[in-house]
Length: 185
Image 1 (cartoon, rainbow, N blue to C red):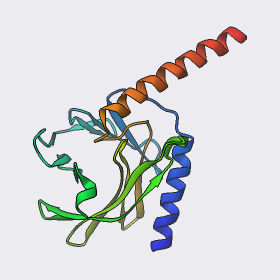
Image 2 (image 1 turned 90 degrees about the vertical axis):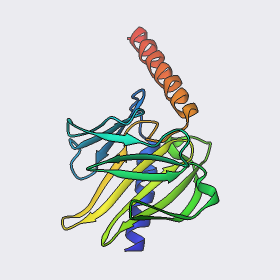
Image 3 (image 1 turned 180 degrees about the horizontal axis):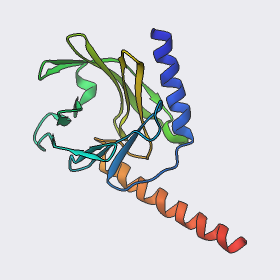
């Protein structure tokens, strides 16, 4: 099982190298099994799953956590994640299983990426979280196998403000390349 999880992680990082979708202020996650099944979280905490809106709340600015809390999805990560390897919130035990520097999205810059497991009773969700780009992916094991959602744009929930600035620059470069390619035709 551990080798399967590592394989999923490596496949995800490879997919991220080819990801070029850009959305400002909102993070979109797609199911690998069902590509039309999208999950989105806006910077202010609005959440949708396959077009249905859900009430959600985020942590206050003075909280030690970055979080999203709703009836369908919960995620809490410490703002200073490097200082602690485990924490418990609302009965969910979060534990950092590992972290490493990875070049995400094909960049030469490496992001500090954390592999986190959230456990409550028998239920488990595993998250991949980047200090700069936020929540990159999450998955859980269900009776139908793994349910995997990967980020389909540049910045995930909890990304630093400078990430969103990079996304805007990436969008301008993409628009510029499109304009330039149209002129060549």
